[in-house]
Image (cartoon, rainbow over all chains, first blue to last red; front, side):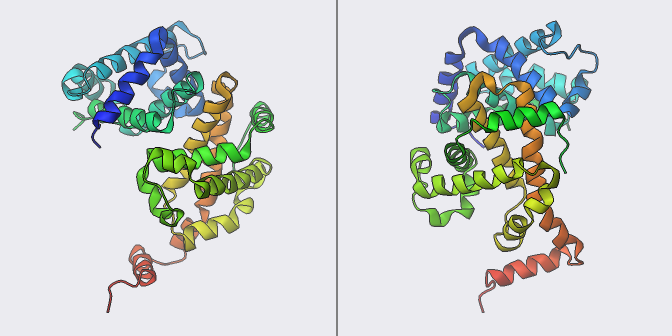
Length: 142
Length: 172
């Protein structure tokens, strides 16, 4: 699945509207994922997973910053995310099925906070974008 | 069977009292067809699905979405017996309409997103978690008849031959 010019424009536009709330939304998406899909917690057994924990906040910021990098390099996601791909392939080894749960919770978070901007067309572009990021992050697994 | 705690049941029924079932249903089905365009394969008779605007404004999409969500509402009132509540619909979707059960999961997530879209902060992480259990339970109940077909002794190839007969393929 390839990002069309319209998709890229939708993704950049949506990300710009997030303003400085990236870290907050990242943390909220993680919280939604841990509650909605408890098996995802297995990768974070070393974390304090109580909602609002400092570790979830910090990790939410990391996720948001990585997505910002991705948004700024939509024409070369593999290049921009290469180090993260290595990390996921050789150290973290998060099973590929799990990326869609975090993606879903990111979309839920954005829908809840930006209803006017989260049109079906923008929703579709963001879904494609997050799927592409997940594909890149698992691309070096084998 | 879906197991909700007392708090989760309360969160679900509390939010559901405020839900505009027709609106959420139309939005969820519309978003399914926009975000996952291959799902349009089941709705070619709905008319104009050529753009996001056409899909979201299509009266057949809205009507069907409302129907779907009214059934879903039934499920919310019968969480202890989803299999029984959806057994006729499961028979219809699996054996007549031939819908891949993955589609029930996709639509369930679109219902969750539509609820978040309409209810914002009130659709808290713990409320979402309760609804994820509900949509997952309904998807499983709707898929039940497929597992029945597969256990009936029909092999995968038998099922494919039956499907091809349905489609009158190959043409003689």
